Amino acid sequence: MTAQPRLAFEGVRKEFDVRGAGAGQRFVALEDFTLAVAPGELVTVVGPSGCGKSTLLDLVTGLSAPTAGRILLDGRPVTGPGLDRGIVFQQYALLPWRSAQGNVELGLEGRGLRRAERQRIAREHLALVGLEGFEQRYPHELSGGMKQRVAIARSLAFDPEVLLMDEPFAALDAQTREQLQDELLRIWRATGKTILFITHGIEEAVYLGQRIVVLTPRPGRVRDVIDVDLGDRTVGSSTDLRSDPRFVAYRHRVWDALHDRPAATTVSAGEVAAEKEVAHV
Ligand SMILES: Nc1ncnc2c1ncn2[C@@H]1O[C@H](COP(=O)(O)OP(=O)(O)OP(=O)(O)O)[C@@H](O)[C@H]1O
Image (cartoon, rainbow, N blue to C red; front, side):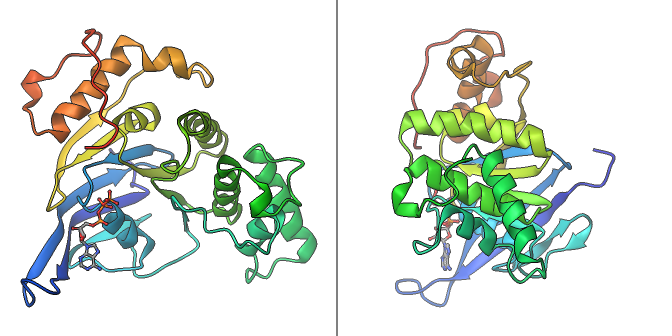
């Protein structure tokens, strides 16, 4: 990568104090995490439960600081939270007493924008996520998928440099999840945002990522970084793409990396192999 990365992790390590049994010791959650994410790139991070995926996002949001190493956003060290990073969690975190429009406007308050301007930006972003006509609905009047669309609109409305997504579709049913994956790809293409997407799901990591970072369990280290080339991913052709031999080959490669099998045993792209279903490892 020659241009300056949008987001760079340089030898990031995160330790926690151990409580209870083993108190006084330090627990290493992430070790030597190094990665450069280019502007406009969509990178997925996949790893087993407890490998430090959420810890990694906390570090990028600036909610916690690395024990060693550093994180740079456009070349500047991350030292705390900021509006240059938007985050979407698994739980939608919408305010129940505010409409969809009101929830999206929330992120824009305190930015010195006039009310009419906030309303316009919120409406535009609700339209971007396919919620035109639902602006006045309250969270309890929206489906899980719609709530997550509102959360995505809210994160994009203040125009962050980077969108951080922490298993955003994990709580949704399979069909809604696939729909929102397509929506995310469409939104990503429309906005050109840099996205770091954390997931448990191998298939989700392959479907969305231009690159997939595979983490090892305790401590979380980069086990593999896989470039994904699936040709022209036409949104809406997800069923076909998921059964494409190249897609299946990538799934196997990620599965092997997660199970610490050497790369030599992985199937090559184009090779058709039996499907293994590993939603959670
Ligand atoms: N504040 C903390 N204090 C002590 N240990 C912590 C703290 N936060 C996380 N950990 C530990 O660090 C490890 C990584 O946790 P993290 O939540 O980042 O994993 P994860 O990959 O996101 O897991 P999951 O996929 O289950 O959500 C875990 O073993 C967890 O217990």
